[in-house]
Image (cartoon, rainbow, N blue to C red; front, side, top):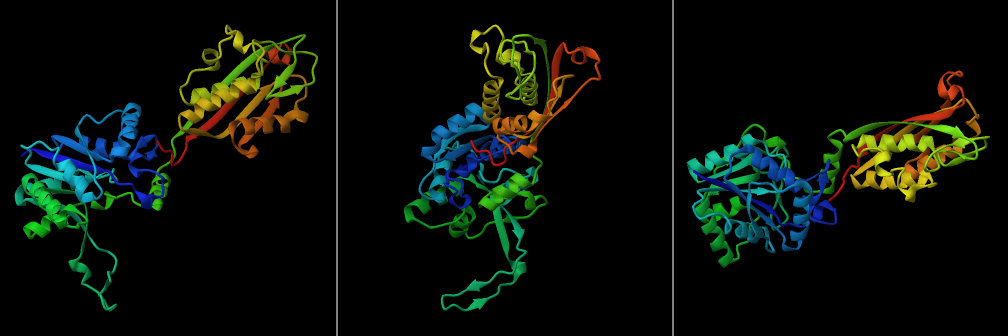
Length: 391
């Protein structure tokens, strides 16, 4: 029996407090909506998906598809109405007429286990309906019109989730009738029960993982429950010492009889740091980004180039966690300049000074640094995807 899924994503998600439709919230670089769609497609239980979105979110959805890719199982797009019932009906009308079973899923449930969806579909094929449910763990109180409180038997209560699966023609007919009668309902099981008298509740292992993202706390917990997406990069650079040049390290002019030779100001420490940042994100190196054949970069401050690199870092959704730079030079002594160097780099990276370290060492007169022919630098940077990054 063919089965389709209507994914409802037309709400505003006001309780999430995100300032926009919560399904476009990006977690670890991917939207909640695409996580839900990809999850459903990976189950291999459905012949197609009808996605219901708000008309005003059409452009945001197009941009999402361009950035993250469109789910190939989405066969049709429908626009939502003023209520959830109207939105589901809009989606049902886009389901092919020869469909036999239809499941309705909230886009805000991106982690539904396959066994949960399968249980609802099997029940719908056998009994005409299948609604995933879980036992109620809290004691529930009912308050009557007169203000009196009574406590129902907790063992007789169930909390229902989505997906909710039904005989397609029956559910469509029920929704059409509900539209004519303006029936207020909170979910499809309530509507189906109203017109057909009964729904089949199913329980299965994995339902506890089928969480719905509703409030801001849900999204905060989502960001805390997994380790951040960390990236580490390493950079190295070396420049020859030459007369007639200023010695600039970490944007600080250092008193010395010679400076570093290069197309820009040859700030070897910043060059190593930039390569560490670019390397962490797989963005190449400064030679490709700022070629020495381009006159635009002749004599330019490397701190200015670092600003350009940081624009690219932030554009990928990442932020610097910390950076460590080592400068290798026999002379001059750099200790008097360290505080200013650290301050410069921290401001450029957008982090507190205690997240940046700059240190210097000699090679005990070994190698080109020890012979005072040049200066080298190495840098390591740790980046993390910004928590709660939105589309």
